[in-house]
Image (cartoon, rainbow, N blue to C red):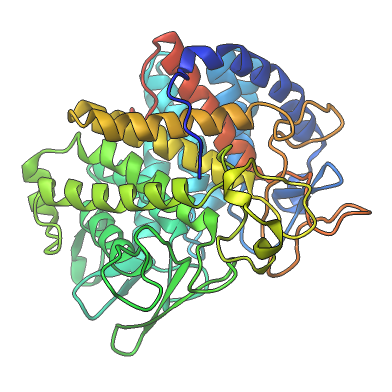
Length: 464
């Protein structure tokens, strides 16, 4: 399990954060200069060089978001212009993309971050530029909310790119774009001019994910362990009835793909912060019968986030970097692997540093939320888990200082079952490569911590 360092603070990490941003600058610049958008979007590296993978277009916003965050952290306007120009030139198709569940990734990372910087006074106020960002986020939220499957229990969910039967855990973090559209007063217009509240769909999707994709140790099935997360739930689209757990990128439906858990932990934690800004009347007006009040919604989100958070601590090696799936068959050959640091160079199963980066932010936000509510013990547990993970990721062998490697965060995994990840010559498993979502989430995490360490404004997606 993760060995929590109770003494670690954000200020202690400041030297590592300063080094991190100096490492990132030439990598972001190089990729932006080299990459031809006609080749698709960069997804993961092979021998240190970013390549595309035509599954879905879900990572381009991370590429440009990295440049925007680099400006956020350093004030280097070259990166601001890089991110702003790319957003205008290349991100419009992501706003109107009806085929993915990833709007909260692509569009909040670009349009959302730029608008936040304007609201913070980091870039000059320009009313038409602000309205441009607002419109993009409104439309993105509506397109995402329209990707809807109603289910038999009165809820519904934003279905994954696999089709209307498929509820992915990943999508919980895409709810951020529905939150922004709600914040801007936008609604989805349906048949006969039906007005569909964004907040209603956010709450319904979140409850469906908690109910079907997260386990609470209540005997739901033979493998119901509190905090275990299933990647996907399958529904009968003829009558909306739940059928079974499933997975696309995990080992089995009855183990936990650790990046799926990371989306749940980070998604519910940051949405807790958003819910805390809403009024009781707003939540009541949303009309989600399963979560009819603000207190009920917060309690459910907190129950879900803490379950996943506790499971991850207990089922991750001491340094905070997980293996790609808690049930991966090769783990049996690693002995007492949970009581020592993860080994990305072992000969049996890959680690996934991207899951660690995503979880770390979830822990820090969850800890801060609980501290504000007076739950000091839980707040300390989660905060120190997040800081412990960050310390690991900001150093070798996870941080890549090599200027010839285009990635920032090493030892991530995209799709282990499909064998998409690069296995270096002489090795038995994939290692040593980066992915765009891992780089982005470590960048976002570093900006978050830099602000905490320096007493700067707290970083949220909804500070717009």
